[in-house]
Picture 1 (cartoon, helix red, strand yellow):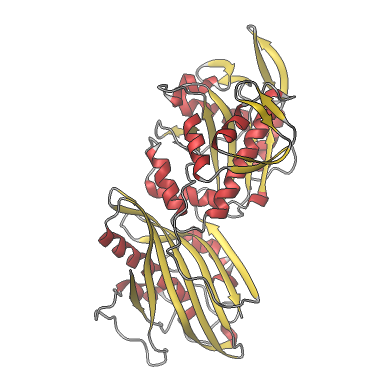
Picture 2 (tube, one colour):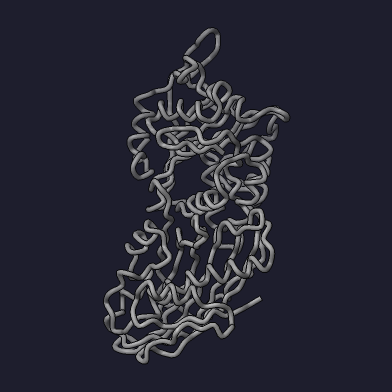
Length: 303
Length: 191
């Protein structure tokens, strides 16, 4: 995991299991449940982090075994904001083929920023497009993502349209509410050729999976040792200069997000051709609009 | 494993409450000065080491749990159990909280303290007071903790009811090793 300080200085070169806060369930060793019959129960929740709205760039790299996943191309690009005061979260998806200026490296597909300059360059490129510089950059790879999803027993998503992939999922995914195991969650997030709107729809599917994972983590956060175990699991797959305590605080912030307060949009764009390669020409005004909406409270009113 | 921490009802909701609680240790005679004559009898907090994840020797886990529980006790005393009732001042109800967490908790003052009934009750009698502490250990050092809390008490005065406070407090040690509450997820119910 990479933490970007404001101003955006790279504190480390690392990697993370973006959802590695997930973990195994442990037996209840806690306080005995109440025997009272309560006629009224109210709750209060909060997490103190600075700033109040924390921005995390979640990156799924396409690193193959043996490759440094912080210096390959990023396949999945999701900028997630978490409002630690309200429990709201915003997820802005960016198509990987978006043709943008990469600071210090010229114009290229935005996912090449990871290859050229690592998490810092990618964070800057995404930040320049959306207008929000991430505080942290999480980079994960296929097997870590699968492992993270597997530890929580998979996730449930609402799939708007059936689709398949000859290589990744020949039998396809049906429309409707479906359960995704570890592999299926990865395949669901990777497939794009059979989707009507290609990379845009794939980005939306990635958001569905992220949202489902967060919901499951939030639902299990009160299990004894759940987040402690999750942080430990994440650290095993991570090279970072963040302290364990900082990771623990971040994990708590993620778990405190109210799934009902998650909003998400995907940056749209036109299809272009640069040097023979198909690229997305992102609607920059739209990207900035999402950023402006979500900057202060991590809520997107409309896509 | 279960131990008790001796807590005392302080006469005022001050930092002293936290210091008293912090100074207490498990089941020995190293007691702090007794409560004022107007305060109710001492009560105990049952402390359990919950789930320990990572490298943390059992003895260190016990010590960390006691330290965490002492901070939690400071809040329970300052917000619910301590003070001279009737009371309507809960401005110092969150010792041991980070500044930001205290500010957030203050926005839910009626849930995170007795601010909803403090001026209408004469006293508080504790039925149950327990803390279970889950710990994150890295390189034999405690780096994070979740304190699962349960406090049950009866009130006397114009408002007589049984109140239960349950939920989780999240803590990390600061640079000096002092545990601080940075997050909370607390439910408060009445019978």
